[in-house]
Length: 358
Ligand code: AN7
Image 1 (tube, rainbow, N blue to C red):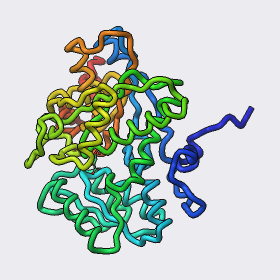
Image 2: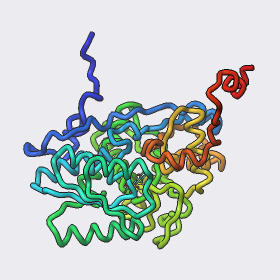
Image 3: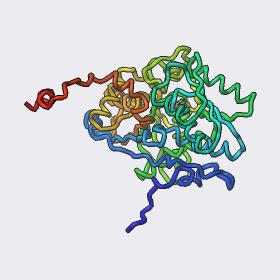
Image 4: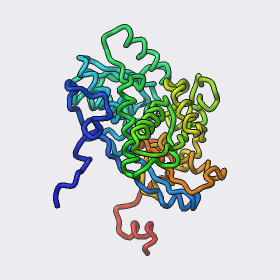
């Protein structure tokens, strides 16, 4: 009894090759991404509704700490295949970290364009450490994406934002994994929405499994934007998007129409959650479930809690919340929302007293 298949020993291009645009010439690139845990959230579901079986797909367990690795492994493998020497992306941080890591591994030059002052510390440190050329512009994510779109038209450099279709192809594997684990699609798929590539990719993945007869129903896609950065909810671009969830501080999502299609075809919804609701959900996940995700990720759980309070989930149902990135990406925010730690003398009695032991 030694050889049960262990998917953590293969990366996504290998695990799902028959579903991906892979040819004889695609390099076998991998950092062992994917195969992330689907964690039952029993405390939170008990708190909000007896009808709900709630899970977190913890994408923070990917090699660079976010879901971006799924699409990036495919996009960078394709860039190598087509002979690119350099790639570029605009990013609120996670795309950049992932692009930088996979570029390093594949031997490509990587440029990342970030909105200055608006990217969480962990993410910037990753891009720097992996050797990307990091450029912080005096503008927001939408401005950075405009530069990337124009530069890739003019110069021989490959875009690895989710406008690159290979990104979406890789990211759809998240839907496959959920179905492979549950044996079916969940009733609801809850997900944060920023540039809207991920909701697009998951919907594509579920539809492909459905068309192949691997699952016999589709989930309803329920997406959540941050209230200060909710262009899809408001119905127009937001010129100065704002939220503590810097990953989804995006005013004009590239995959806007596709996100609406996922919402409408699945009979789901896209709504907004406030920064307070996001923070509360982030703390609840960490302090009662032991799962530390970044603020943007908590938007999915915040959205489910909000809809449960409204009585939206009437029947017995299963809900998978995508926790898109790890909490360690944004340690400064985490420190800011917790009670300060206690400074004490180097003294046993004092420490015991603080712990209420004496
Ligand atoms: C943790 O890295 O857009 O709706 O440039 O990092 O597919 O954009 C990040 C997005 C959710 C939103 N959660 O996903 C970037 C970037 C986290 C994220 C999103 C992002 P999309």
